[in-house]
Length: 116
Image 1 (cartoon, rainbow, N blue to C red):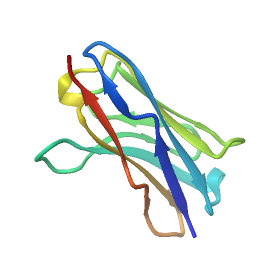
Image 2 (image 1 turned 90 degrees about the vertical axis):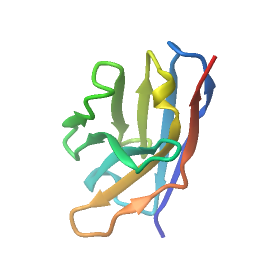
Image 3 (image 1 turned 180 degrees about the horizontal axis):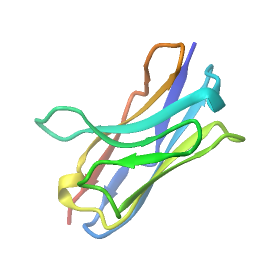
Image 4 (image 1 turned 180 degrees about the vertical axis):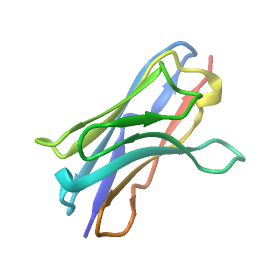
């Protein structure tokens, strides 16, 4: 059974930084593409960042230059480094993983609140 466990969320002031982690189990990590999605209050879930099996990355325009996605295949963990956070980054952040042959997998989410 695939398990994706997010951690690292919390309350941070505008301009601050946080690093989210997604620990994966039960999945062939090296063969999985990963992504971070978020659901802001009252809004639809949206893609934040994506990283391929080969390490190629893609970002939503709203976070380019501020967020960085990475993966550690040895630790079976994926990360999202968030800097210069804004109140509009407030959301529940979800880890997503999928191999080429398997279904999509989601974590339970971690709350990020940006407020003074």
